[in-house]
Length: 166
Image (cartoon, rainbow, N blue to C red; front, side):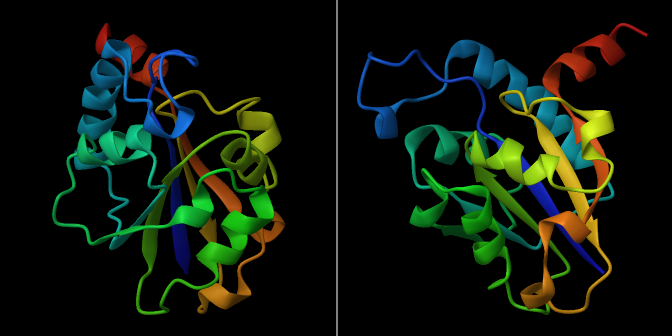
C-alpha cells in the first residue's frame, strides 16, 4: 500500500509583484497553513519523505506545514509540471517509503487529483493550501498509475475554518 499526499502551495502574493518563481506567501496563505499544519499534526497520514517544488511559495508552504522531521528533496521538475510528470516523479520514490508528500502547483496537482477514482465526485478544483490524500494498492512506487489510485481524503482550509465553528 502506498499513499501520496498532494499539498498545493498556500495563497501567494499576486502575480506581477515579482517573478513568479520568487513569489512568497500572502498573509492569508500563512494563516491557512496554520490550519493545515494542525490537520497534518492530527492526521494518521504521516509522510516519510517530502518532494517540494523549489519555488519560494512552495518552500514556505512546506516550512509552515510543521513537519521538520520529514526529509525533504527539492524537485525542480514539480515546478511547471504536467500531471504525468508528477506521476513519473512519484514512481521514483524508494519502495521503503509508504507515504510521501508532494508540494507544488496547479494545474498539474488538480489534474493529477482528478484522475483518481472517486475524485470527480469529491472535488472540482484544488484550492491553495488544499490537500489530497491518495492511496494505491501497490508494493512498488514504479507501478503507480493515477487512475488506479483512490482519493482517500480532501482537505481545504475553508473546510477547516468551517469545522472550527462547530
